[in-house]
Length: 248
Image (cartoon, rainbow, N blue to C red; front, side, top):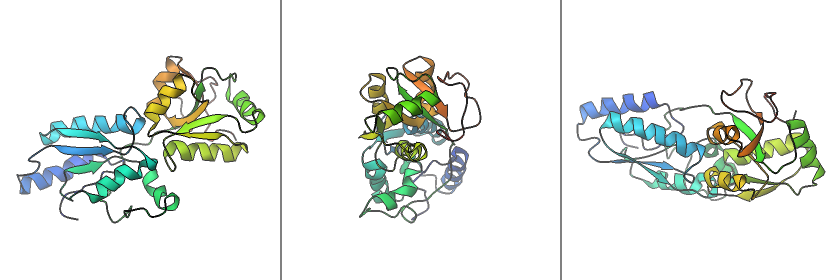
């Protein structure tokens, strides 16, 4: 694989900096040029937001530009395929999430090995998921939301970032728990999906707080539940009760 890590999968920033610094001390040529940080989803989503924060810090530490490249589609497998094929020289890295672990079970003929084709450095952050809807949904709290979804008989639509993405898996678990079905609408990332949710193009989404908190606070969407025991400062969910397992 070479000396340099070429894939960062939700990795800890401190570890990245330390490893790069030690190698740079021994081989002063690195980094001699800009580093590409691939986000396997469209711009504007939660992973993209985290990646840009990481890139800013890395740029200062390395003294080189870290360029964000968004390659969305197919639940992140298109972007991660690009990373897997890149030279293992430290100039192509990526930030991704649980979809890396689920990809082999969901995509036949995956053209890379999710373990052996990457150097896995660690976790950057744990982010809760939120259940949100367009403002036109009549439900005022999580109980009413569940009743409304069930009463629609499978007509409710939900947006997600592709098969195996965090937003997709969250919605699947949610449907299983409430014993009701919804119709999925696939996007290249939850960034563009959020734009369509705000404009009312579909009904419901399960997405990370990175992408939903401000939209809830500004009244652009409705928030119903969060997958954490702790209250999120600044958010105003329609139902003030915080539930660890929505729908239970």
